[in-house]
Amino acid sequence: ERLRQGSINILVATDVAARGLDVEAVDLVIQDDMPQNSEVYVHRVGRTGRAGRHGKSILLVSKGVSRRIGMLKKVAGHLDNEPVPTASEAEELQTLRLVEDMLENQPSKLAKSTFKAALETDLSVEDIALSAIEMLVHDTDEGQSKKGSSTALALAVGKKDRIRPKDLVGAICNDGGLDGNMIGRIDVLDKISVIEVPSSEIDRLVTNLSKSKFRGRWLKPRHADDWEFSFR
Picture (tube, rainbow, N blue to C red):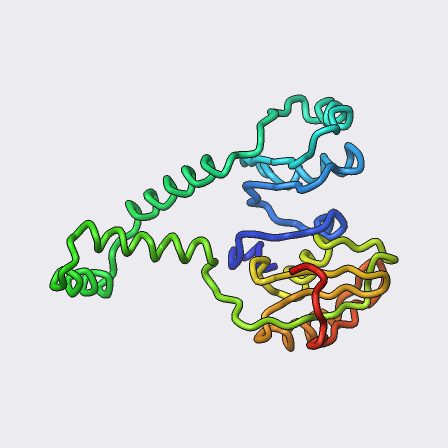
């Protein structure tokens, strides 16, 4: 509902959850694994380009799936094979986008007064600009919101339920209402899964996820403050 209303612009969803979505203006679908069959693929990419609109679909795959890619080409008609961008290419794109944002942004009164105050110091105009850009890049790298202290959230589903980390992320983002960049480490055991989340969000997540199921099983969220994650 929040995606449909435009209050959020990114949604993480499993194939099962995505079947219940009815959102018209989807510009991009990113698939992080191969679909099980052509029907699932068609359903995924069909989320873009509705009502005469244009959209893109990106499928992330590893080597050794050429046969299955061939199956998808028969359905899609055409697929462009592109290598994963290198770190330098990603950095170059990030730089271009930052410059575009700067060109489109109109400075506020606070920004103008801050710049004026900075000019009265020993800093040169170049130093002021570089310092401001460094602050912007740092915020982008670290995320717009700080997670602060974290704690562990336990859910009553695990390997026996065939749940994967990405399923857990989808549930926490969609049902729990938490931004994906605020999720930390994840441990999936036989009967439970434990997820690192901000301490400030744990109570809200327990409340929201108490109404959620995965493949018919209640998630039964609870605090797991003493949990020690296996991955550091």
